[in-house]
Length: 100
Image (cartoon, rainbow, N blue to C red; front, top):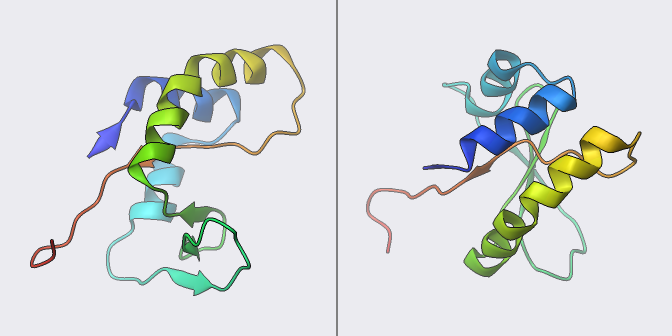
C-alpha cells in the first residue's frame, strides 16, 4: 500500500528524484535488499536498495502516523530552504502472505 503518494511525489520532485528511477531502485523485481546492521535504538531494520541509491527502513505503525502528520510541514521546509534534512521519498505498508 502506497501511503500519501501525492505528497511524496512532490517531495521527490523537489528533491530531484525521478519517479521512475526511484521505483526501479526500491521496487525492482528479482533482487533482494541488502540488510545492514546498525545500533539503532528503535530496533528497526535498515536495507540498501539493490543499486545502493536509497536506504529503506522499517518503522512502526506509530512512527508512520507521526510521519504522515509531519509531511505537509516537511514538504514546505524542503521547498523553502536548501535543507540538510534527509529526503524521505515514500511510505509503504507491506505484508507477506502466510504471516500474521
